[in-house]
Image (cartoon, rainbow over all chains, first blue to last red; front, side, top):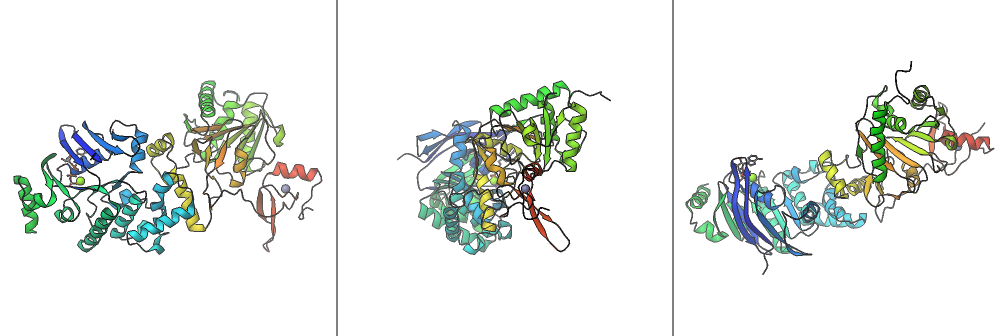
Length: 256
Length: 283
Ligand SMILES: Nc1ncnc2c1ncn2[C@@H]1O[C@H](COP(=O)(O)OP(=O)(O)OP(=O)(O)O)[C@@H](O)[C@H]1O
Ligand SMILES: [Mg+2]
Ligand SMILES: [Zn+2]
């Protein structure tokens, strides 16, 4: 089987500082990869390099495109990459306000990607937006309200709806549950798990929270100082960590 | 006092502006940056349009200025006087006699012809500005033809008002390529933008942008399949000349709330009255 995403030797430096170094892995269709590690370990740097938001210094990010099969997204033209970014790829930011248009209604937020790919029927856009609000458990009556009037959890769910409405195949998420109350986190996680399963999504999820990866990720990478120090099936890495740093990470969480 | 050049600007500046105009004509709807000059009037008075007019005027030209359709507002009169003084060109209020027409907020009712130039004063040239304040991002959206955001604006309109409520500065797509702000003309005027025989030049002074529509350019107003564009106007005939197809201003005529609708294009209305057309409010 062809990997959906094949990451090869990605490195990114900030001046003399290492952002991430020589990261390689394959992600297969329907798989969810978790990336964990302490603050500053390079998780966001790696994710942004993969999603085309940051240009890495070295490496390849090969995506199995619908039209032309595997292509290095780093060397494709910017229009092609941006087109991927609003069709087959989705990016869920930690802070919903980074991923939403706060001055636009919920319906407009969800509809934007549809309009960006050429949908020109208002009624259809509105129906799809309302349908997606329902799928992320937001009352359809809120369709014309701005996200500024939503709670943090609702904003995050709206951001997810806005991203998934075009049926992407690969979703990048940076701390999607960060900054939310624990009870709100749990509900969001359940929702995400349901969507990932129902839509057969592939995803790469960056998080501090081992509970998140336990619930969502099939596989796990542990990062430290920009390097991947351990990778494997989630349950294996969490239950039987091999690397001393992973052991520390798992045990420190167990103490909480 | 004549210590300034013909039409106020020096020749070098005019050449720079003409280059921007030519580039704009070559790429219809594309916003060309130019080094806007200080003019002896405030920005709100249409310094972008004034600079474009200064760059295209020749001593043989006949110049007309309209503001909201009228030749006699303070703004129109002072710009007309400015070029009478600095360029010594002839001026007129008759649309068909003018070779260069500078305008704010209207396109004349009478169809323009080849050889005429219509110069628009533009306050905000960027149609995407409303939803995307970052200039770097809007420039990229234009270059990559990413115009989904324009429809988000129209979507918001319909969701809030039940119909597309944008009635001025209604966005258009030019030759299937660039999305353009036609300046704050009423959307009633949008259909006149396309396929026009005259050259249309747009100047934004404070924002330092020039863009253009060469004659007979395709211009399409954006819309949705189920909410098509409509060039609406007040549903009345003109009270003075009886015209049923012109854009109307609503006037309060007495202190008991009496109202009257008259053509906003004063030259058009007067010409019709002279030709014997009479509306119900005409004396
Ligand atoms: N724009 C930048 N300029 C310079 N250094 C940066 C920049 N962004 C990140 N870094 C550095 O790169 C390293 C990796 O940062 P990154 O943000 O990827 O970590 P992270 O694992 O996402 O951390 P967190 O969990 O706190 O979000 C850190 O040492 C950080 O200080
Ligand atoms: Mg981070
Ligand atoms: Zn009239």
